[in-house]
Image 1 (cartoon, rainbow, N blue to C red):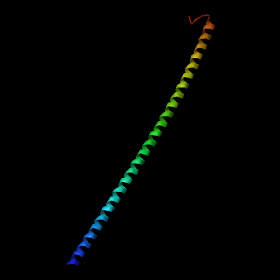
Image 2 (cartoon, helix red, strand yellow; image 1 turned 30 degrees about the vertical axis):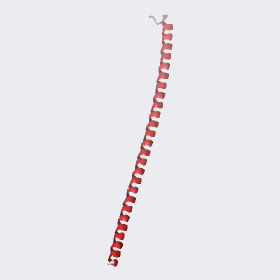
Image 3 (tube, helix red, strand yellow; image 1 turned 90 degrees about the vertical axis):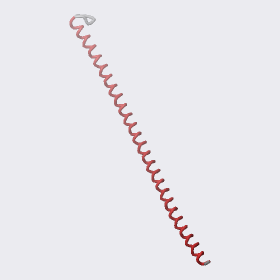
Image 4 (cartoon, one colour; image 1 turned 60 degrees about the horizontal axis):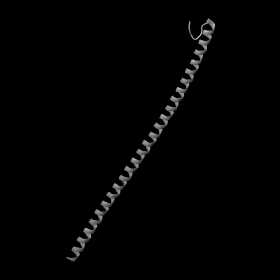
Length: 102
């Protein structure tokens, strides 16, 4: 009888050890899943930050190009305005009229 109790106790301890091992393995698997999920989330954040940085750089470049184009247009307008004024002066001097009157 004592031997049977020892046998049952040994079997119960072995069963408990097996269950503990399964739970430990499951906990380890969950920890690894959580680590992988955090790694993926960090990678997604890194990619999103990089995309934002690139978009900002593209916007700055577009702004710089637009400013350069605007400066070129203003310079062209000033040049044309000067040329028109010069032609008017020449035209007014050639036909004897003054102040743009004909």
